[in-house]
Image (cartoon, rainbow, N blue to C red):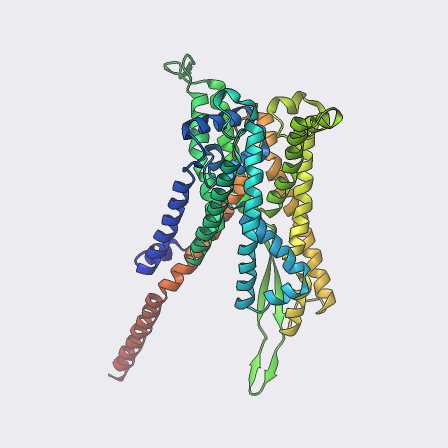
Length: 492
């Protein structure tokens, strides 16, 4: 549980207030930048094109996910359109290379110098990825908005100079956002990348709430309470919204439990004598999380599922004959099914959710194997004289840890897969297509909120340490005074 008294007391520290205001200021800057359109043409006309495209292509999982993570920047065609995608991809690539290349793994173990070197390589890799992703995102929007000629095809008929301008602006904005994320992380109040993504998700909530309220309150509708009070409320829509709210609360509680779930393995340290001192003889715990990979498997799965849709759009608009038909089938298969298609669309509507679940399940095991190194942990325990009761150090400890982690990962993978596909089936059960924020977004929000609160509590303990030292000293002095007065009274 969080120690809220310490957190509130830490606000009296000038350093704590400075860090919190710095983080809030940089997040506000990001939100302002997310509203600035790309300097291509008339912003109002361009926004009308994108809004029409989003309205008629709401089934595109790729566009919807990119829009949520960019905080609505995609729908506004903002300069923050690319967002943190290049930096996240670069981080994932460097992490995989660190495990695959022995020299990079050795560099990572060198301490602060090695980590800074790998971080510098991550920044350098972000630049070319930002250029590629900028071109791909613009091309995707171009393909999506190609059918809206009556609104002025500003994206579909852009010249070479306009393409260069768009790519340059998007690449520079992605590097700026990476810089802001790292500055936020340096403040020690949460992870900058996670906070930026969270703010982007939160920015979409007012629009979702407004749409839900609009679906309930309708002109001409009638809803009587106790047979006396009549309100312009659509009763069917009201029950749907109440169902969404109830499910959201239950899912949030479920996400908190699985995010915090862990198994603690008891580690014993043998006593050893060095000189005149005795070391060891203590007992600690090794926590193994239920979901070691976090939300990375879902992000990987979405990236893989977006590829068939992207290829399908290219083939359906540029190819002919059987290849064009194959492209149309890819777009149909790998779009998010609607509530009506799940109940009456046949097997085609089930291709996307089943593929989504299986990919999340597989990537959970894959990324956990990359992050969790049982061999390294067992070797470190053996060097430090630590052992698990009933398990021999070395190879047996490694096998025990891998078996335990695999069992936990099995349940974690099933939970992540359930959270990923839950909005799809929730729409079918409730008979609505308005669930824009699903289990993935809730998982990100809860994980980031808990981690940020932990870091704030740690920082609060640091800035209030002197106060606790004074309190402890004063308590000791008061106890000594009481003992002295008792001795004095006995002498009398």
